[in-house]
Amino acid sequence: MVKIGIIGGSGVYGVFEPRKTVKVHTPYGRPSAPVEIGEIGGVEVAFIPRHGKNHEFPPHEVPYRANIWALKELGVERVIGITAVGSLREEYKPGDIVITDQFIDFTKKRDYTFYNGPRVAHVSMADPFCPEMRKIFYETAKELGFPVHEKGTYVCIEGPRFSTRAESFMFRQFAHIIGMTLVPEVNLARELGMCYANIATVTDYDVWAEKPVDAQEVLKVMAENNYKVQELLKRAVPRIPEERHCGCADVLKSMFV
Ligand SMILES: CSC[C@H]1O[C@H](OP(=O)(O)O)[C@H](O)[C@@H]1O
Ligand SMILES: Nc1ncnc2[nH]cnc12
Image 1 (tube, rainbow, N blue to C red):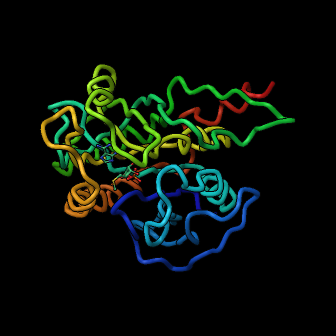
Image 2 (tube, rainbow, N blue to C red; image 1 turned 90 degrees about the vertical axis):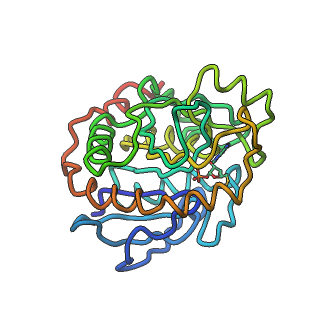
């Protein structure tokens, strides 16, 4: 069984040489791409490029439910989501890594749940990210000498457009970073009792700063910083204990009505 799943974001395609590729069909359709199975530091890992093999799914059309379901079906218990984010604060600089600890949802029309009835669930999202994986990623990034923030609140917008200046000024009152894909990936993982950690790479200052953000810049900076994500995964993934001690799956005991 593959216990660790990685969902790669903009500019992150292939974090290892796949040993095999699996086509998975789910009740929610196909995932963004066939799931690649390979190894990182001797640990078996499954990988899905969130936007598809050729970046064909925009953030609001990513098949989030199929991606999470497919990983669950393969045995994954821990999901690592890699994202490119804009910065809402001076001190979160392009090239920095953020081990996100909270999010605020400004998306508008996605499939947020596996439980649309007759089974109804209200999942707790007070602490959305796995504390065990967050600690490992933060400590490993520091050890590698990468600029890393132990915490950060990610505001997730619907996209695919970037924010207006007025929106950006509003968002920076209460969040540190901004992106378009964390929701509903993180809450869907939790609904299936999986751990989720977010490794965000800052690619730009959002438009509260002088120069408007553009997609080419995001992809260019992400490509330049991709090696940090690769190194971090290589060193951190083998440190993730096989058995979970985090309590992320405990929500399942109390979420059903
Ligand atoms: C290419 S610019 C905007 C795009 O980049 C981020 O993608 P991801 O989170 O998958 O790395 C952002 O959320 C937008 O989808
Ligand atoms: N400034 C930004 N706004 C939204 N999503 C992003 N992804 C990367 N940079 C972004």
